[in-house]
Image (cartoon, rainbow, N blue to C red; front, side):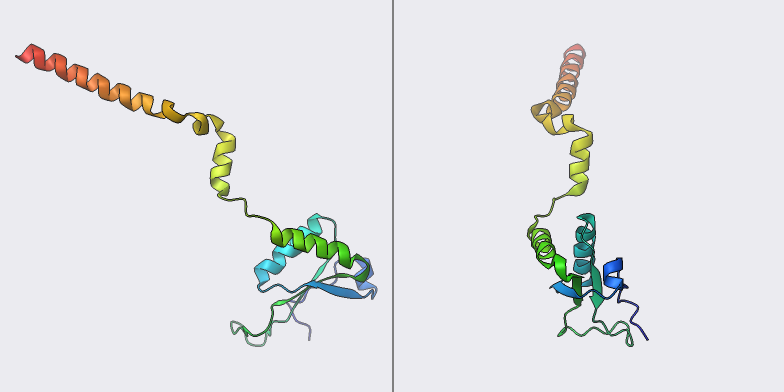
Length: 137
């Protein structure tokens, strides 16, 4: 019986029996999926091979690696370079803040202008209080 986590070959060359080689051994499934997505976005065919034992779901052997990312043997050097680029990339940061900054650039550039309205309101309150106090005396 085949392992449900083990994915079938994704292109004709791998399906026809071309030798594939391991270019990365991810520690987690998330890392494996990230590398796979990046390679496919770059036009590099790849296959994930999981070493998880599905007979006992939920039980994880921390001594074993999650699996392998495999590519056709002829594309090994290109794929390794892409994996290194993916692994060395810096995180973007706070994506929500980046989206807000892109949508409303004036908010980021407001600086001291952001405090103008509160200062004006507080000033108006003091002036009204002073005028009211002077009429009451």
